[in-house]
Image (cartoon, rainbow, N blue to C red; front, side):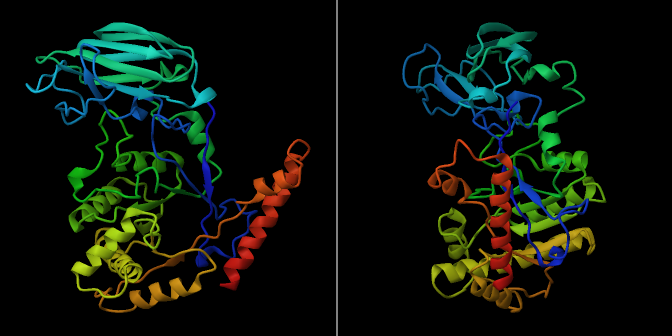
Amino acid sequence: MNTKFYCWLIFLSSIFSLSMAQIKRPIGINISSVGDYSTELVFTDGFKQSRSWISSNADGTGPWNTGVNVPLNVSGYPLQIPYNDGSNPPQIVKTLMLWDIGNAVPTGHYRLKVWGNGQVRLSFGASGTYNCPVDTLVNVTGGGIMLEILSSSVSSPISDIKFIYPDYVNTYEVQKYTNEFLDFLKDFQVIRFMDFTKTNGSAVVQWTDRTPANYYTQAKSTGASWESVIEIANLTKKDIWINIPHKANDLYIYQLATLLHSNLDSSIKVYLEYSNEVWNAAFPQHAECAQMAQSLGYTGPEWERAWKYTVKRSADVFKIFEDVFDNDSRLIKIIPSQATTNGWLSEQLISYFNNPLYNPHGVSANALSIAPYFAGNVADQIVSDGVVNSITTAEIITRMQNSLTEAFSAMIAH
């Protein structure tokens, strides 16, 4: 499987002195969100990365997506197919897997396993109609795959579907995550789950809004489950960087802290950040945090209120986690700031954090996080220099190293 990851560095004041030659290198990785269109094949069961159900007319007429809400059970499976709401034609549901990811699709014989009474159909990169329950091998030749539930009985509906990659058809029950995914993470000290849990624009408020671990897909708009975060951390023995949804209420934060404290390996550190880039007006959380700040009586323009609310909720999150973890040193509490060249923003955030109006319990933070981007223009420079076809791997690495040096210099200067 081809796997695409986006690199990200953790630069904190507490680790500036560490050498890249050390075994524990001060470098982390952002892993992408789970999706049918992602080349990051996280789970050995490909159905865990399938798209949310798309409803359509059972007779094949009408639009690709009718938008009819088909009732689902707690694990996300339809209670009955075809579904008739009395207002629309009878409905079936379909989903997509491994969609538009080119040669990242593992070809070969997949294991299709379906529990419950009904019928499913595969199209595009695989084909066939199967009466369920079924446990069979399916040949995938490439391209995306569509799975339709054509029927599902009321008395014993389809309640679980698995579509296991060829390399894991006999081992998926004891290996939930792909070797490629786990191997990639070996070189990093910290895993940041911001995209994995779909932090940006999150609508999550209550604990019941989260994606359950046993949900049919982990590609929901609410992000992958926190149980998956814990499993990945415990398997890899990597520290984790988590981002709290900006609308999450105190009970959600408490439940999350309790889940982590009870299930995370005691050797693993937790880098704790409120939301992601609330300062960035391009993300919905910026305006929404400013609005929530206004409801608390915070003043100033939108950007200022957003910053104040970032600090207020960061302090709340820190306090709740401290109470659950009993001030455990594993907690690394982060004040999230901006790029290295904007020292003024960092100063404002620290000033707010020291103000009892926004931090009434006087909780402390461990680090200020910033964004010293590096190597972003290396590819453009290679093109403009006309050396795309002649440049060596070593020369590319040298250019990236030089860019990293520039990023460090900017960080120190500001």
